[in-house]
Image (cartoon, rainbow, N blue to C red):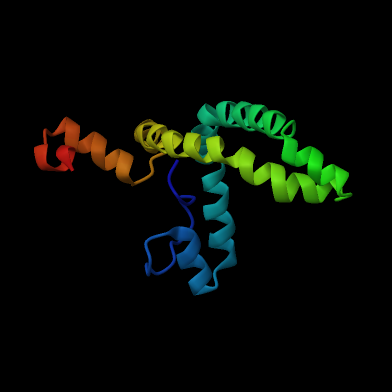
Length: 141
């Protein structure tokens, strides 16, 4: 739990973000420790939406690759990587970006539990404490 090991010394606070502060201080041991403490919370938050985004991306790519402009690009002799990266991917990303915006709200609600479990100070913990103490202006904000 926490952002660093209990025996580690935190870097001088400039930005409040452990990774950036440790880089600014040139403390590579603290940087590695802070990065290691990011792995599990990141996996927990990403696991909920990763499947949905991946499935949507696949379906969108399969739909876009069957469009007429892809056949025209193949007929013009473009390389397959150019067709995929330059024509299919930008059109396939439209629904994925929309879904990513909706997933952002889920990440914020999931952050409440994740920050509580991993003992991270953040917006989720602040929201939880505000609700527990009935801090109405903070809850409304």
